[in-house]
Image 1 (spheres, helix red, strand yellow):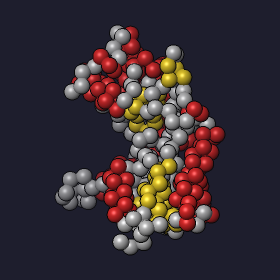
Image 2: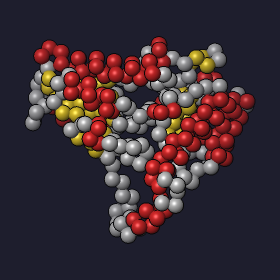
Image 3: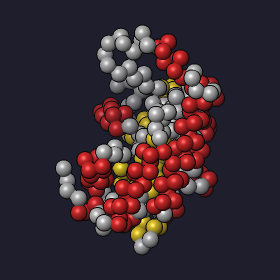
Image 4: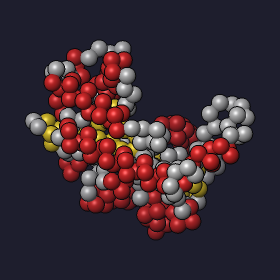
Length: 287
């Protein structure tokens, strides 16, 4: 089955998109190869923890090369979807080159339109982005001139929109974190148009089921659509204390040109109201 025979390995982040993870695992396992998952340290709150990511990636490559194996492919997300973090792709690609990785594939599904991209500087063998076209007809193509006209209404065009979204999502994230007494899950420079904010530990987001119950409750009772994620700290360095507990739940917010301050104020106030009412995840019904 191609290059991925017994003794070959693929190294990828554990938070890679599920469809890619499943496809790689199915193909490589059948070929007798091995898949090495590198756990992304989260939350990322300092340069030290960014360094922890590169250290863990190096360890993953070392595991892939153990016992005479060869790392045939490294898969790197430029921006991970959960947790939502900009990965230092250029730095990881350079590490791959130094370690003799055969091919490097960067999954950039979230990147173009969110951050500035220099494919040559990144230096991967493959840099792949999504081409989301919505409905399966030609309607998206005739409106391209209108889309370009709309984008150019904003100062700086597309780059101006990216900057506006990045600055706004950090501002809104910091506002929420201050109101809840928590923190952003990554430094501002690692938050493009989305950010994850720690939820108060008293909410008790201790599992994926808890996260789903809270997300459903916010949608059904308050008309708020907010991805909620649970995350048990894997490393002591990434453990964040809050009150008498540890932050294990995160709200994922985004910002686009149509969002307003009120969208985030409502989320802030609803979470505070749940705490005031003593309503925690274990009390919510599973839909």
